[in-house]
Image (cartoon, rainbow over all chains, first blue to last red; front, side, top):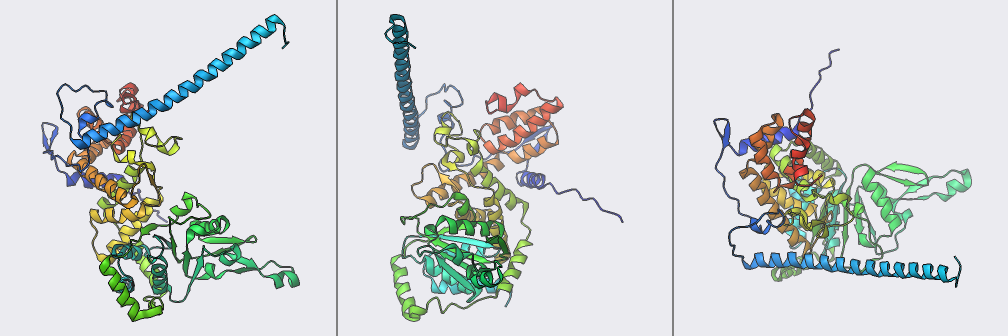
Amino acid sequence: MIVMSRRPRDFFKDFLETASKKAPVKSEDSKLLWDYEEVEYPERTPRYLDSPFLEQVISEPVVLTARELSILKEHIEQLDMQVLRLRKRNKLLTILCLALFLFLITVLVGSNVGGFGF
Amino acid sequence: MSLKSSIRKLRDEVKSRFVGNEEVIDIIVLNQLHRRSATLIRAQRGVGKSTLMLLMLKGLTGDDFVVISGASEVKRGEVVGRLHIPSLEREGVERVLWAAFVKAKGKGIDEVNRLNPYTTANIHHMMQFGEVWAYGQRIKVGDYVLMANENPADPTTFVHPPPFYDRFDICVYLSSLTLSDKFRLQSLLENYGEGLVDSMPQVLTFEELQEARREVEEVELDVEIVGTVNMLVRDFQACIRNREHSEVKPPILCEGCHFLKDVCSGIKDPPSERATIVLTQLAKAKLWLEGKLEQDDVFKLALWVFPHRMSLVKARNLLDDLRNILIREKVKMEERNARRQWLILSKLMNGFDKGLYTYAREVAVEDLVFAEELMKLEREWVKKGVLREEDTLGVFMKWR
């Protein structure tokens, strides 16, 4: 009996090939060329708002729209909240350190003076 | 009458008895076209959740349906099965009397949010494995139609776990009636009186429904549609900081992440893989029934596949917020085409090319899902010695 071995279909490759055909390119001197058409994002913010996260420096002045400004405000609010959270944690840890330090002092003084034995 | 005509007739019969929410009826009908379909209807009280559920069950199964109510004290024995006492007393044999709910082809659950955890666990098991257990005995449930409803604003006794809701293929929301719809409802009630649901005919037999389900299963989708489904779900799941296994969720997880304004940052808990399966089934059903399916249709169907499967970071109005995310997602897919991302990836899969790789890296910084695929290729190139580990995107962006 002859068993035909069939290679499983690579759906991802099929998808990539179909998607590639949908967006054609020209080939010139082993370089790929195409006309880039800007896609309009209904809600996307401009790239300069990303620059702090990408550690980029903006050299030109930028004008913000009201929506971009509110997004910036939202980011700042979120960062403020994070700062508050960290401050609270910091305070708590300081108190804990102080308490431990006082406890240590008490133990040291107590054992040296001989008021109570450990 | 052909199977497709019967399904269209079912849709028309329900629409002639149910005012408003036409889009919801369309999607519910499509959702019946695969095995062991499960539909969840969510709405405020008095909007018609139970009526719609009964109309669908009656249209598909005639009188072979059982509705259990979460509001009453429904017990495990009434939902799954109880012990036949005479057999135990006379013969010492444990015989189980399986409940009508298990045996019926049509299963309805009214006010599912009020079911107790034990009953819910049994129904969950049935939806997961297609079987039920009682007193150490098992019965296969086979194919069925399951419809459930709940009012999420109701104070409930129990909060069901997300995996239970995930077993429902779709979750539709009904809105209250507009002014003109209220007039239409009054005229409808005048015609049918109390017998609105009773007047609903069984449009097709259960065997015919199963035949339609088999035909839908055999439908082959265009590779582009499959790609849209997979991309959509992956974009909703992906997070470079591994949200799935992280204790903290967005927005905290997003702090310092440059994908902050991407689709991923708006999603707190991602959808499961089941979303891909259901969306594919719905796409097949639509193509089978209407003979055509566009990319836009996938986005419309997706609106009902996601609401009960994921949670958003800031949900003011779940459906509106989800619609906005889907619009952003659609543009993102257009941008991928404009940048020839998939062409570049396809070429890179055939072999390393420095120029293409440099471009792909730039793209990957703005596209998480593309970055994942590029990083997979990078790992292969590192193994082959074509690329140094320290030069990879993952190391450069501190994603590893």
